[in-house]
Image (cartoon, rainbow, N blue to C red; front, side, top):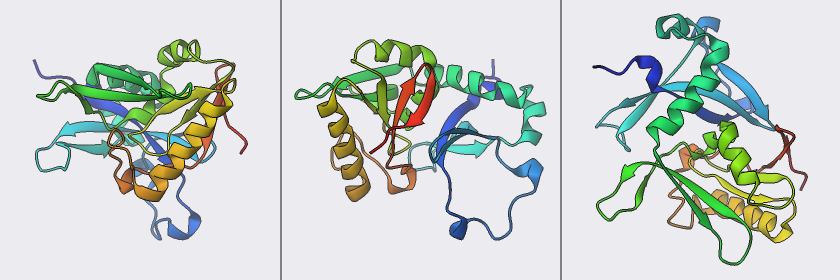
Length: 212
């Protein structure tokens, strides 16, 4: 049985594009991807994740515009819930790698295992910012409020406000990723996936930018 196309919808975190580099001729309103504000300079958009052997990582993304929602049988307001469920279904492996020196963790999503037994990068780690169930569990492992770095689409690192050294580690990781495109092999960051320098703090289920 063929998977319904609604099962291909995944969330994509994006960063606001500076006005000086926006399209000179914007898309018609019904062709504009559905987008929702998140926090700081991040917003959420949605795409169909389609297998494509010609693509660098074997998959390509087709953005979901409002005109596509009827064909998918999904209301625009339901995309976030659907996409978050699909993300976990399509990325069954979730690995937490705690830093040995501070209370901070890097989370990797995978869509299977390499022959060596390591999880393959899922490429959508930043979208874990939308997974409330996962965030609630992760928040129990740190002191204070949950703090997250998502400097690229395929990077998610976290600590807590009760761990100043952990927060410093997140800032260090962000700096490394933006300076070198991902110096540590676990990140494997492509410059095209870079998002933001900001850290985000979760308080009472809402996100704000953590002051520098």
